[in-house]
Image (cartoon, rainbow, N blue to C red; front, side, top):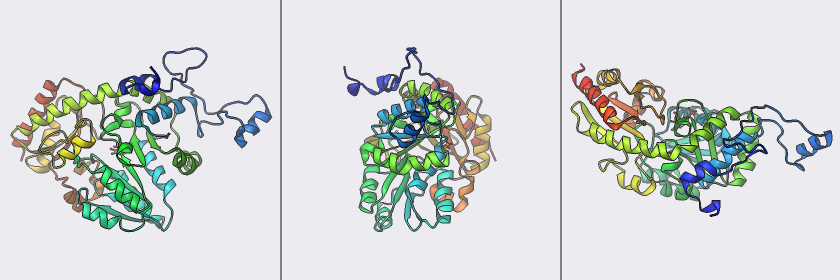
Amino acid sequence: MSSENWRTATRLLHDAPNRTEFGETSEAIFLTSGFVYDSAEQAAATFTGDVEHFQYSRFGNPTVDTLQERLALLEGAEACIATSTGMGAVSSALLAHVKTGERVVASRAIFGSCYWIVTSLLPRYGIETELVDGDDYEAWERALSRPTAAVLIESPSNPMLDVLDIQRIADLAHKAGALLMVDNVFASPIGQSPLKLGADVVLYSCTKHIDGQGRVLGGAVLGSDKWIKETLQPFTRNTGNALSPFNAWVLLKGLETLKLRTEAMARNAADVADALAGLPGVVNVRYPGRSDHPQHELAQKQMSNGGSLVAFEVENGKAGAFACLNAFGLIAISNNLGDARSLATHPATTTHMRVGEDERARLGITDGVIRLSVGLEDAADLIADVTAGAAAAHAAK
Ligand SMILES: Cc1ncc(COP(=O)(O)O)c(C=O)c1O
């Protein structure tokens, strides 16, 4: 069977093997900053591009290349550049593409650091930016009735799990002359394929599900060969947004179990979300896989599962949320997500503290909201833990 017909679970292990002459089973780690040449002529020819040879790990490294190739094949993208972090992926993609005097439109519900880039950093360079409320498609039409260079969205969004119609926004973005960039962190490459829905660029924090075991930071940008080579690569190479070969190797190990982990985490998340919905002390639950999620039908259309994140609101606001988090015995308090271990955070005082009270109110991030990243523990143990948390929230003053 040709490798083109391999299914995802197989591809995660066998795509882009790039084996050396030693025939190693697991990929080699090329932990080297530089490379040597056989002759001065070979060095010169490498720099003119007449000879293919690694030059320097800021430009390219065999272990990082293997990760990039495997991620591109998984996503169905022509090319990929791995970056030092997820924010490195978002900032490089935007800054490489957009020029002074151009315009960026973004969904309002984006991760705190992405929000800072769009609302504070880009305007410093004379780039006009506009935020649009997630599922207000008339507002999307208005915002994209003017020429625009890039549109950035996150779906499902952090932390309230709003699901946006990627195909619809892609069509509007393209009419405005923009590239649609999708931060696909919450869904993971297993749960959603934005390029198939019309997106042009997909962004990952590989720190999340791709590592998924709390070890390393990393990021990735995927898109067309032309855009990656002509627009992004000169930017990342010259600004130094490179992934360490060691981190690339850890991420390759993470990819081997990505499908297994994310699907098991999604099954656990669905069970935990259902349990939370029936608990005293819980005011509401948002999970894209539940029929009471406001965009459940759309989530079913564009995602292959409900994902591993659940947002829920407890009684008694901040006091209730803190009591709930502090009552957890198994679920750890951490602002990371996508990990094998279940992690919970209070967005209003952590990840979304800096977006301000008014913006939080607009996004539905009340003081009682907790974001839960569901891991691989036994669902019954997780349900026992959230039951204790909800009871503590109910009793809080
Ligand atoms: C949706 C989303 N995008 C981007 C990032 C940034 O990733 P990193 O922490 O790897 O820079 C995060 C991190 O929490 C995130 O949740």
